[in-house]
Image 1 (tube, rainbow over the protein chains, first blue to last red):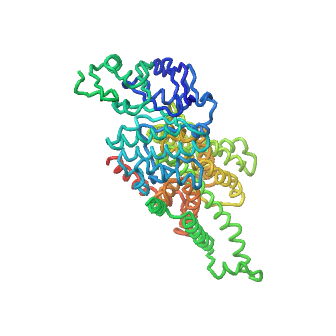
Image 2 (image 1 turned 120 degrees about the vertical axis):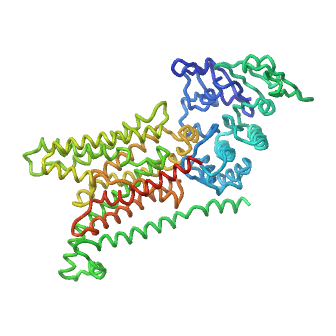
Length: 262
Length: 354
């Protein structure tokens, strides 16, 4: 499989604090990677490095084999899209206008199709004529997801499967929309998009991800299939909780209930 | 369903042609009134007679009044209004806050300080000359002052690439206070003639408009108008945040620099010919956002036109309300704008307390 995103021995420091200390990660086309780990583990920092927003102090990050530093903002936007944790829209834009921003300055039938389809996939088609600042947090998050889908669709049409980065995409969604969003993301992956998502819910990560990457203190504490990573031992080591991981038969998906934690 | 939803989304915003038509109509009416109004009133039938080559003595006199007094003043008012309103709209987009205004946060004060300094210093160096102040130097100085004030504010408010609105506004008040204090000092040092010149900057007025002044700010007007299409999409994306704008393909640092130069150049040019005229930059974009939405592709050119209309109307009021005397136009815009600004502030507070 083609490698889409790669971090090679990436280190990030802010003042005396080390946010990332030599993290290496590759993400292939069509793959869904979940980043998990406690607060301050460096998940968001790693995402910012992969997005090209943050240049690492040491090491290097690549997108489709090219160093991220050699892309300009416009070229980068064609290849990768980012869904931030929360977005504050300062002026009363319509949902339709916000979603359209994902298309850049492109116009035409293909953009109209992408907008209509993305609104439907994010479940916000009925909010199209609303002013975004009047929506609930979860609704706004879905609108921005639709915007990101438009950006991906426009980029894919020009450069092939890109990179989708999501920072806690389910944080303000209800259960149904959490599952819907992750299903949409998996559908993107099936079309060749490489996906990296920060997820706090280990159970969602377990269902969603082809590979779970657990970060701790700016390093990768473990990566692999969910069943290999979400284990009693790693949870105790990384999250400092003693929880009994259970398995759902017959697939053997691991799940964690807070009830078992002490 | 999606078709009707799309139609619904579109119908919330008026069509571009309607907005442009309405603003053009307003511009035509205001221009007409502005040309006809004044100490030497020129009624309708005489305006029409101007186009008659055999109009006689009255027509010749009217022509002189219009060509050498009314029209240059009108041109100046239109351009100053357009520049101030556009500077406001760009600055509000840049700082993601509808309360940002060049006059409020010290950019205009910086320009006025530079102009006042130039008046005093240039006068000292050129006392022997009849035309003491090299005219071309003033706009350049005002421009430099506006640019310097904006750059200082931006530096103060930005840390780690993030611009704090609160710091920006407060620092702006401090910069404005400092600049005003320095102007006060210059006023103290000035002789009578210099004092009159400085007072002109502080109150804002379009009296003494000439074709030369209009020609001096024409390049700024044109440059600003031409630059707007290049920042419109970027400012839209910036409304979601700087990181988000970068994710959507905007070269954010470059956009911010261009926006700052537009603001500083517009305000500097406007202040250099008309002094400090407040509230146009805040009232016009805000009213337009309510009517046509916040998308900058339409908002920026609309601000340009509406600012021009508003300034021309305000100037017509300023020179006719106490005729034959003239009120400084800054007083008119402040009387109309300050309550509006308060209303805006209270509305925003109500929103943030939700």
